[in-house]
Image (cartoon, rainbow, N blue to C red; front, side, top):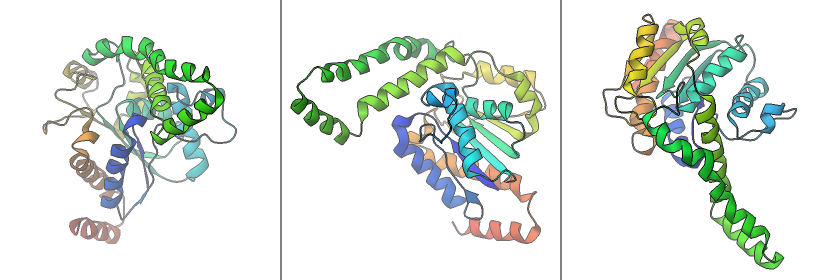
Length: 272
């Protein structure tokens, strides 16, 4: 079994890696691999992958990651957060032959993002204000070469903040424009493999979305947060959510592995 984690904003890589690392430690018995939204492209990238920071490019990038690094016969547990949930559903739609045992969708932004309370605030910023981030790069190009080199070194020392911010805003703008209607066809086809976890006070996917999808799919596994976790849980509750996710995975996989391995896994988890 291989666990792949699809996360959200590349600006929060350090927090995301912390969450992934905790899941990795807790899942010592299984082989775990993490995959972040932004990463290197594989050879032979398609047109979508050429736009690797766009939403469609991110979906193709993750499919390429699995093709190139995960044997086809490997069973998968997919974990998505925010727009990572949309990406997982798109992956399952585009490549239905993937051996997905379970997909855990945390705080899923899979519909009407621009119409959500937070989307109404952020859509103008993400779709238009991102060009403000490009302004310093344009001004930089007008400077003398010697000064330009020094400033470029300074920018790189600041971890490439401007390019990363521009890329994150570009992706966010595409999310507002493309994440519109819920993909009920894909959800219905894979309903038994999906666990949805909605926040009680999530302004990106409000309670209305939770109640509607639960009503439309009465046999689905839809869970509502009772722990006060916010949408950006990686900032202050990464360990708590990682432990919760680990328990979900363990409960599901315990019924799929032989008894001796099951006992070994439980013993290892108990010592953590």
